[in-house]
Image (cartoon, rainbow, N blue to C red):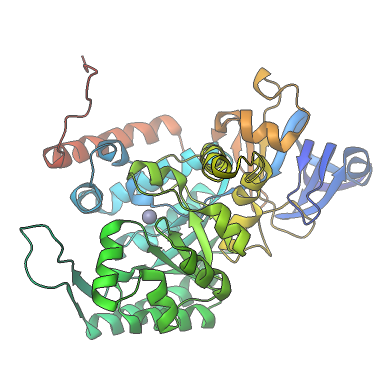
Length: 472
Ligand SMILES: [Zn+2]
């Protein structure tokens, strides 16, 4: 009998470690929230006996998947927003006001349950409503998911004058220094309080929402706070044409150029989206050591450019994946990224290996951890790291036979194949069910909030909910 540990998990183990080892008949031992051992099953089982045994000979055992960008407040509104553009200020932002704190908690539970069931062990929140911040952190602790929780407010108002005939005059902005000082004090307090409170599971970050809504002074203060509290700054950037137009009209520079110019970029800067990014801006991100949270589904949802992830990675930018609420399943998102970038980068040069399944897997695991500056704890299965593990059921025709387990998972796997999930060494999903909530009760609760959403937001839509289908 080997040493008793909390869990021994068996199956094909994809480690995402520096050598990218895959143990075809492997095992992972977990004890006290940490990974104790990873290797060939015979060796691990000779040394350790699990009080609980998970996995099976055909199962796939992978690092918990990492979602580097999401909004916990948007799960119950997303279905009212797609294909009805533009939708941010018309639908998504008013939805946050309708939610209230209880509704937000329901929305966060639905998002987190959705993610956990799909093998996602780390999510990220950048919701901008101060009353929601603690509620998101508390809900993450309750649901047993790891969360990068970013807070921060806007302190700049800006207005884009464009060639639309109803707008006259010049583009302009005005800053609010009082609001800025309050924001800095609030972020400082939040980072100080949630550092220890998050118990290693909820980690506080800074959200500097966007170039049009944040002053230069605030970006620099955010950078200083991030260094002092060992965390990162997250900013939605180069997302749509209006943002670029505004930045060029106000500063004579594109948004990423502007942040580089004022000294706001650095290794603790996580750019969100960066769809409309020039080669020069990619160079600026890379030379600063900045990271990218890439949400490929949003490129299509808002009909914006496809982020040039292949060029970013080639330049040395670390790229993680984000669900951004639209599809809360990183495996699905990674597959979309794989197909999208395989095509975008592959067609001009006929390069079928310009972006591979293994690249997509890295973005869903270890590179996501790096993007969040959390790679010392998560993102790969290595002894000493936190035990965040997802087990995919291999007893189904979808994943058999498999010659290359990473390729099979990326091409053929599905979030619904997840049967067990550990976060910080605690079982969060068992037999495909989230353990922290009664899922039937949660769905009933979500239906009530959704009815309120629908009443409030339907009049704001341009189009009926369907174009051709009849909802009878
Ligand atoms: Zn976002």
